Image 1 (cartoon, one colour):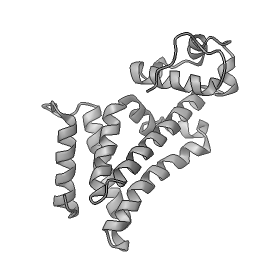
Image 2: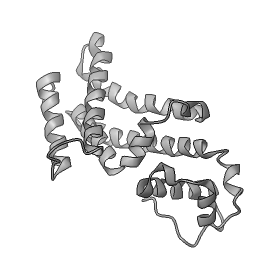
Image 3: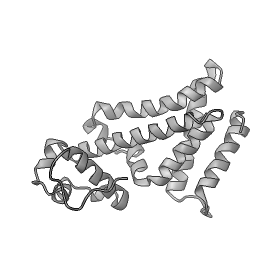
Image 4: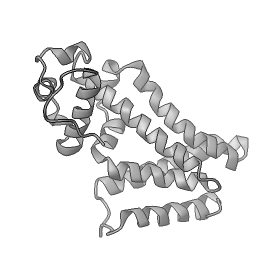
Length: 197
């Protein structure tokens, strides 16, 4: 999905080429391995060319995070279209996204405290959009005076389970994380939230 030709960049959208390369490096090697100069070399452009699109590494990380929130939003929207039990589907989709993109997930939700100062305003709005997908389903399932607390509870559950799996904190670690995710999410929804499974 994030593959970029090793023949380098020759025409078209340099920003997109750099971003796709950066996401691949992030997923394979982590954020510490990201370098605007290295990305320029891979794309076959001058070392200064990336700086026309990303003023610094923090701006690149912000752009990657925005992209990640967009992907997550799409996953939650797809789960929402599955019909009844949308909150369960969204919870599962949230955790599976983290499992499939662990480094991207860590970047999106684990930014250093000073990162927001360098990030775009667009980035600050993306989590709200993702949470908006949870909120839509929550409003349909809970009384108005419970919506905010219910949404926070559901998001905390999904994020906590995702973090436990991504950081391999479960012992023993499950052989089928997707099956465990569906089982635990359904149990939580039935037992603690009172949703139909």
